[in-house]
Length: 202
Image (cartoon, rainbow, N blue to C red):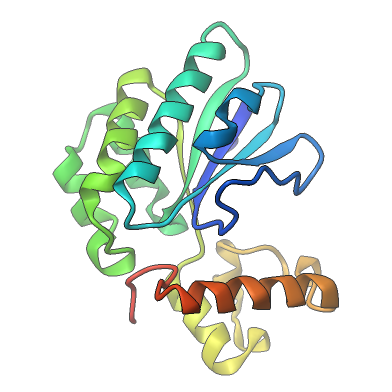
């Protein structure tokens, strides 16, 4: 699916609560405390979360609602990318927006409870708002079958079909020591907080 969008909101477990972080040009990591500083001019906006925090999910919805209002007359438009849905399930998100499946069917057909598993009610208001406003939803996460294969056997164990959902191997950079160290620190912080990136244990 190709979308030309004014702003791209990425909902994910980013562990920088309370901070704005410019990861790339025209991008922003934001939390509710920084909401007044969020500009529709940012092409990508990262909304970090603690997966089981109702207040943070409410703040995400408030930010999305405000951005949608700010971009009401903009062209191209807003989209929401979701870590909690894996890429093979994009057609189900499209069907949900089109009204051809119900919210309950979306939850079942995306295997949400086994692949993500955090309380559906945390994310449902954002999904409902997106449907009401016809904001494109994008399934962004790599399938767990692929991440587990890499974890168990290394990236070179991937087969041709696996690359339907991830960049080509030559585009995956593994030699950036600074980035690797930063990720290590983030994962250590995550583990100390007793959180996982999802409840998927397969």
